[in-house]
Each structure stands twice: as structure tokens, then as C-alpha cells.
Length: 281
Ligand SMILES: NC(=O)c1ccc[n+]([C@@H]2O[C@H](COP(=O)([O-])OP(=O)(O)OC[C@H]3O[C@@H](n4cnc5c(N)ncnc54)[C@H](OP(=O)(O)O)[C@@H]3O)[C@@H](O)[C@H]2O)c1
Image (cartoon, rainbow, N blue to C red; front, side, top):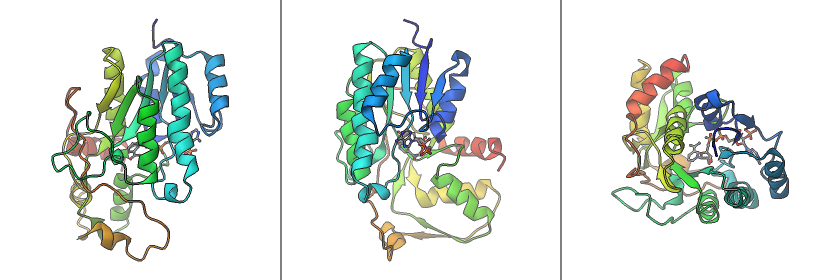
């Protein structure tokens, strides 16, 4: 089967979804948004698949409000785990490849050398638990863990938030005790295509730009690439969230994803440079 004959991209308007649509454009993928198909209703999703009969499904949609998930606890499980589980099952029945995204947050952040693909999840928040459950329900599909995506579109992302604050001339206060990897949505889409182009085996993959660092370190690079000189004050995670009245999810302090299966990605600095230029910042 030519898997690119009838590609279905769910969540096509999100940061990653937009880049997936571009990277697969030559195959005229069918992109759908929440208005077309709401992942909070699994029977409707299965019905949609039965009718559309895709030859490849890439799910970029998710419940991504990490703090909101601490209050709104059932929705993340439904959208991030239960429905992807149904999609995975349908795809297996029809031998259709299915790509689903997961997160560095499935780890508790205590591995000081980072996380390879085979380390078992140890989630410490509701959002992370929902993604860890998805990894079980979607076993046998392509599960791509990624981290701190920055792309186009209206979704909040850390890089965009720092750029906005820096350009408005504000002094910045940024967490310095959380170390993560970061991912340009376009690079993630390209690397996803690499997996499919090469018919790599199903399983877990780690995709981020090269070079883990703290949020504070990343903010320093962004401000310098913008040619600005805002003062950036480092704070601990606890200090940063002190006084917040709504629940704050626990985040892993060290969540660097180690990629042992795919070609290396470009560095985070190169990716940021291109992001800043290409989004005409
Ligand atoms: N963003 C990150 O830093 C990050 C880090 C690790 C992993 N990931 C994972 O990577 C994937 C792509 O993330 P992203 O940053 O591109 O996400 P995003 O920009 O937030 O896009 C998610 C999309 O999902 C849609 N959506 C939300 N609820 C839905 C529902 N019930 N039914 C159908 N669509 C729904 C959203 O629509 P609306 O905008 O209309 O709500 C949005 O278009 C996701 O699986 C995410 O969990 C992201």
C-alpha cells in the first residue's frame, strides 16, 4: 500500500499540525481541526476513520494545558489517551501506520543523564499520566516523544513568550532549575517524515533539536539572537510559581530526551535562528 495516498492529519491547525501539512504537501494530506472532528468523542472518531479510510494517520491534536489538567482531570485522559488508543486499534486492524506524539513530561526528571527511548515512564502530573497511558494504549504504533515545541499558530509556546516579552522591553524572570530539550515544529515534522519514508519499525522515538539547557539558558540565547539586552533574572521553579492561587502541575526538572534511533537534528541555536528569521520576528 502507498501510505501517502490518503494521509489524514488530525489537529492540522496546531503548531506541529501546520508543519506536517507543509512537509507532506506534495501528497495533498487531508488536514482536520477540532471543528471537523472532536477527539473527545471516540465513537465519532472511529466512524470518521471508517468513512474516510486513510492510508496513514498522523495525530497532532492534544490536550496540552499542563496546569489545567490538574483541575480538568478527565478531558486529558480522553483526548490524549483513550481516543488515540481507539485510533491505534483501528489502524492496526487495517494495517494503516499511525503516528502519535508524546512528551518528555512522561518522565519524573530524576535521571541525571537524560532519557533514552527504552526508559519506562514515571509521570508526575495528570497531563503526563494521560500521555503515559496513551503510550500503553498505542503500543505497536509510532510514538514520538518530543519536548517544548515552538512553531507558528496561536498556541502558547515558551520561545514565543520570551520573544514577545523581550521585544516589549520587559525585564524577564526565567526558571533556571529546569533543563529540557526544545523542538522546532518544522524539524519535528521533517523527522517524522524521515521515519515514514524509511519504513522504520513502529515503536518509541525521541525527536528534539540538539542541546539540552535550562529555560533560563534558552531565554539568554533568544534575547541575544534578537540583538536585545533585556535583564534576565534566574529563579527556581518554586520561586517562580510562589503565590499562584490555581493548581500548578509538577514538572520534571531534568527531562533531556536522548535519541538513539534517528539521525541527529540541527542544534537548538540554529533552529532558533531560522525560527526568528522565518517568522519575521
Ligand atoms: N507544545 C509542546 O511543547 C509539546 C511538548 C511535548 C509534546 N507535545 C505533543 O506534540 C503534539 C503537537 O503539539 P502542538 O504543540 O502542535 O499542539 P498545539 O499547537 O496545542 O495544537 C494542538 C491542536 O489540537 C487541537 N485540539 C485540542 N483539543 C482537541 C480535541 N478535543 N479534538 C480535536 N482537536 C483538538 C487544538 O485545537 P484548538 O487550538 O482549537 O483547541 C490544536 O489545534 C501533541 O501531541 C502534544 O501533546 C507538545
